[in-house]
Length: 312
Image 1 (cartoon, rainbow, N blue to C red):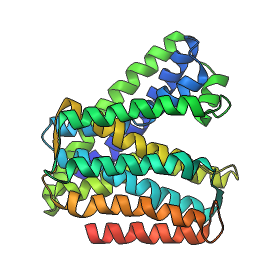
Image 2 (cartoon, helix red, strand yellow; image 1 turned 90 degrees about the vertical axis):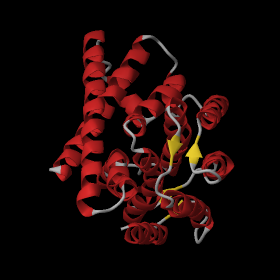
Image 3 (cartoon, rainbow, N blue to C red; image 1 turned 135 degrees about the vertical axis):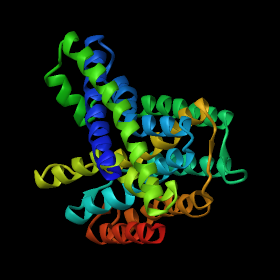
């Protein structure tokens, strides 16, 4: 039953996030908000909605390890699992913005999170406020450096078939309800599974829950390879990791402080997140500069497999 709750919860979260994304972008287009603004704010926040809802609700329900483990595990899965599978199937070319902007900002956000939570094991409200302030600065910086034509695929697709106001509000309502219901079932199933197998909530959070909330990125990557289209960019995955730390943990901590009950979240998982993030830089530069291929993909997948094995 717990596994069923998790599966249904993940399905509702993925569907709810998609409905919320489409309704939010559709409404923004109807209101004539510039597409660059929509791409940098509305799309980014909407695609992070499942992680945000799960983290906020689990923290409020008294399961902070799920809130923190979800973000740390998702960041590890985005680079180790999703990127690993993608570049194993098809090599991708990395843009120069990777080592000039994306990777340094991701490492800065990760380092700030490390500095905040390691000393006392708690992410306080004011620390969440600092993370969120960094997010605002990051968005403002990107506004000044991103070109108008660099819009997300989701935005271009929705712009072609822009829904009317009626459908927008229906999708918005359904998406919100699906996200709430999905988070409720996912958290209930995760806690129940942890108790059933006698493991900590942190184990379920950094494996099952985090992979589940990374399903949209994984599905998009695999479909892009199958259709022989441009694979999901490294920048998209790094951007997701940045939003997970600054937006998801920042907003969650501002609502309620997040205390890591399981010390391994800090003593082990956080280091894995930092380690895989650091590993990306040499992989991008060697053996073929500014390209990630099969060798890099296998190394990332092996790293992720080792992480899961040691976690379980």
